[in-house]
Image (cartoon, rainbow, N blue to C red; front, side, top):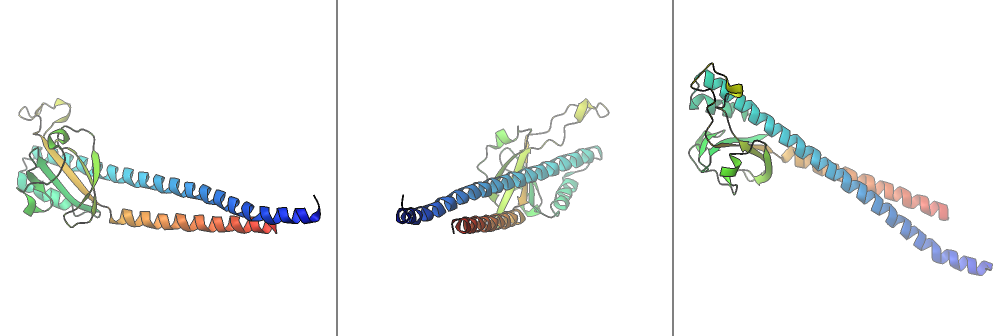
Length: 214
C-alpha cells in the first residue's frame, strides 16, 4: 500500500477507533456505576430493616417487662411515644387484625383505623419482619417495617407467673415507619458522585486514545 493509501486508511480508521473506544469506556463505567448504586441501595435497605427490627424487639421486651410490673395501656402508650422521639422514626403503630389502632406514637390516632392494603391476618402471623415503601401521614417517603407483635408471650415457659406462663398474645401487628429523607439524600449524593467520576474517567480515556493516535 502506497503512502496515499495509508493516509486514507488512517483518516478513515482514526474516527472509528476513537468512537469505538469511547463507547467501550462508557459501557464499562456505566456498568460500574449501576453496580455501585445497586449495592448502595441494598446496603441502606438492609440497615433500615435491621433498625426497624431492633425497635420492634426493644418495644416487645419493654412491654414484657411492663407486664411483670403490671403496666397498663397508659404506660405502654407513653413508652411508644418516647421511642418514636428518636431521630429517623416517623411513627410506631400497633393494630389488631381489623386495622384498629390500639397504640400509636400519635395518641390522637388511637381507636382510628390504620389504612393499609396489607392482609393483617397474615401479617399477624409473621415472625420475620417485612418491609415496604409507603407515604407517611405527612406525605413524605417512609420505609415501613412490620410483623407480628407478641408482647405477652413469656419465653421458655417461665412458670414464675402461672397466669402468664405459656399464654399467647392476641393477634397484633406492629408497624415502624422510618424516615427515608436522609437515605434518599445520601443516595442522590452517591449517584452524582458516581456519575461525575464516570464522566471524568471517560474523558481521561478519550484524551488518552486521541493522544496515542496523534
